[in-house]
Length: 473
Image 1 (cartoon, one colour):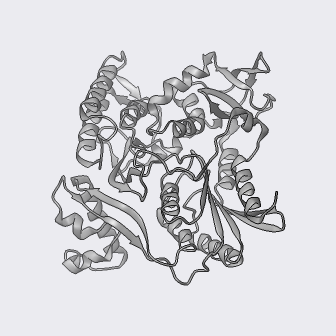
Image 2: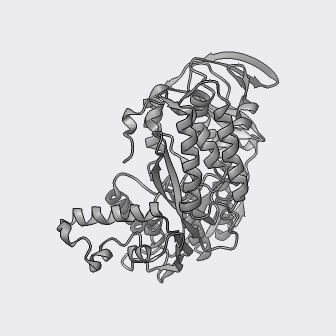
Image 3: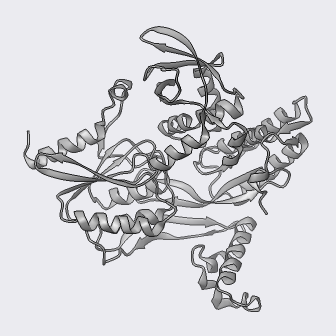
């Protein structure tokens, strides 16, 4: 059973011996259940990291450690695997202990932070360099917190640091509002005080930013529709499906179309398949390899899902062990899981999808916009798009790799309320760069000057290609 996050106090004291036991438990869990734990580092390196972590905990003067500090010890250990999906869960409810948000939206260039937007009344100029917060150099803060980031590609590390800066500021460095800020603009340093912004305002803005939407732009006499999908998940799947059906029905005869995944961190890959079906007539490969590692934890989870399926279908408990019923829940390939031995892998190779033939198929030339922020299920979409040569990909290398661990299960630590996410599958997408992200056909990189000018260089390149195709100079 998982601890109720609503009742977890991030400052609750955890005995340091309990944390050390959790570290030992976690090391064994990674070794037994994680699908590919030693791809980026060796097992010996991971063991040494765990030993170092336990030594640091033992050296603490206090016998009890706040839960939030325990989280950072464990997250540093989890992130050392550098595999994108292994992590310790940071409960969103923990933010209630710091109800106000840091009001500066930052962008990182060459390891320096710049203020993209100031939501406070301090009037910090846009793209001023953020030099110090609470007398601590920001460059040092960014360097120190790299150990909590669980990805390999440098450009995606920067994206995570930008999004996590507020959390680290308040829960790791423990700098509470108001904050004394030193910024540099046009060669001059200034000091100001900024106050926090209520969490509710950020939640509302996040909700707006994560909504799929349709816009358009003109190139000559051509009206080009643009579909932005900020994530492959939303609360109302029926509304999402209808929106996509209406969008492609309306624009199926257009000559050009743009899909924007630049802010899409992932979600459920099936939501991406739903969109890909509008471009494909025949079956297409979705993954080259999809292997689940069998462990006691994974088998227990499958039994749980099986029992929930039977319960929801109101099947009498006496029949739950009847062999034919196993096929009622197909998501985890139960038959293969039950038949495999602990430590083995269930193997899937060259998985294909048959697209829905009833969809309005787009026959024009699509463009796909990707960025360093494009990750997980959005990388799956991008890899399939590229492998099937559906159109032109414009932007930056995706944040997620073409081969990665996926399908995380959650495991409650036995001696603390911390929750670990352990990926139990190895997913290899169609492509030839397993250690890289999906590479764009037309690469566009932004400089600080480009950010300051607020130019959309990706879209400008798309317009250039369309103009050339239309014979417009």
